[in-house]
Amino acid sequence: MKLPVMLKRADYLWNTFGFVVDAQTTLDDVLKPEFYVNVKEQLKTLDVLHVVSASGEFEARMRAFLTKEGVLKLRILEVHGDEAAAEPAPSVDGLTVQWAGKVHKWRIMAGTEIVSHGHSSKGEATEAMTSLAMQRAA
Image (spheres, rainbow, N blue to C red):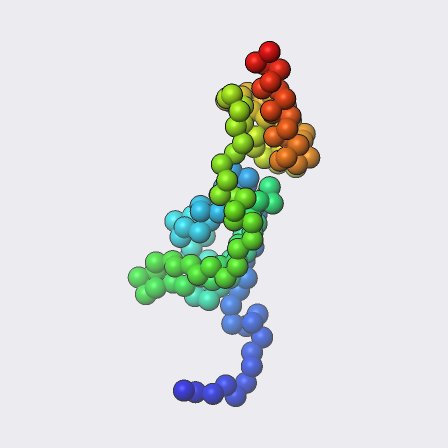
């Protein structure tokens, strides 16, 4: 065992990369090494990836390890909100709720048609979807 004789700042040992994924991207997606196929060449062993969902459903920090063959392996360091990300989108009578970005926020869809948008929270959109489904049924 070799004892440390000097401490180094983490900035000199590994890079930290962060990015925001769209609301349709799930936590399971970002935990797969295949998800990073377009940026794998930028990564080196011990780099840290900090991924946040645009909808705020989840946040994850992972450490990258590259094998000699160039295969990317990820170690999960921290995950927040994974239960919410794993939940399927609320759905009633063909209507679904989804995150649409900063402008439309949470919206209600009927297939590919936007029924309603601008809801400030997932709960508010789900309530609106339920009342809309009840109106349609009446």
